[in-house]
Image (cartoon, rainbow over the protein chains, first blue to last red):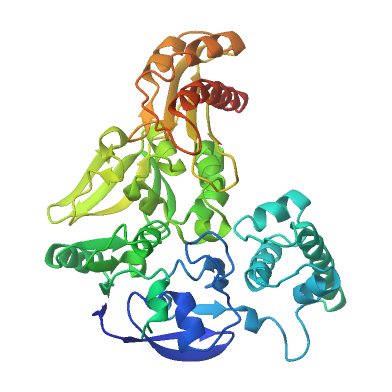
Length: 169
Length: 298
């Protein structure tokens, strides 16, 4: 049994393929642990109340809002954050699509938006506009009006399918 | 690890955290630790704790327990493990085929991220009167399997939901399974909700199960209507149910029956809608929910 007092405890998890370990109080939210303890500041804190989705990460294969998860709950988890998308200087096709389609303005929601886009496209490689809108319903953007975000996700879907076509598994 | 500035962020009060590996350990912790609370997906509890509306002294995280996430067709009904997340309920083929209203309800909860963490058992035990899943479970007469010091007990939906945020699960008990008795042939179900934005809590939520008599006509053999967000717990529109049983279901009879649907409802007035408005919407959404369920009967 994993038992913890109110004192700091060690939380270990795999993030973007790398093993991390850090200290957290049981009440520490995962987003604060990622940013302040592990210095992975790509994941943003928007509202802190579970509404905006800026802190969205992929934990054990599914998108979650990292402000709605305790760091201790992530002990032993496999996590993907926005830092894990690009391959060195080469942007992930979803990031490229956002870049090319002006899918962001201030950029604050973008890390979470990208993670939700990835989860959606992994599950549904060719989503309709309605499906895209539903897929990002947990991510708020106050700049774009979503039009270019939807466009970016459509473009990303094409890119990913072409990529798959050119490199048959 | 919190600096002064961090304390202004939404941070829960301090608590002890336990992640037991077995149900026995979890039950023991709940008995021994003063003011302890079960943590499942945490999508409601953590929100309350961050706002300091809840401040338990200890959390017993049951998500490390094995084998509480499953959907099984058993002889007496469909068994759903308490830790089954909404996303799994939403996409399960058996549920869609046999209890479409659960598919409807799961798909309308919060957003994708919340459905990826939130569990059916957590939603039931949180018992928010405006939540979708409790209303759907009340509509289908779900049974709630609860385990505690004295073994297991099965609580019918009508007794499970006691009041706002209150169930009949004891402080040292854990909900482990939800059992849903199968519907007879020629049955179908639906859940719809009225909300202004995707992901919002329901202004009015209505579940419906329709069972037609054998043969080809639309004679109503049985009907169940559950109402959410219009009282302290999910309610059943019993008067409408009684009116419709034995009648041929069509636009006219459904409209007639729905006129009684708000009897016994006591909806709140708030920024999303006045009590008066909700009383009217109960009728409208009861009609729509019944029609949708009827259209799904094979």
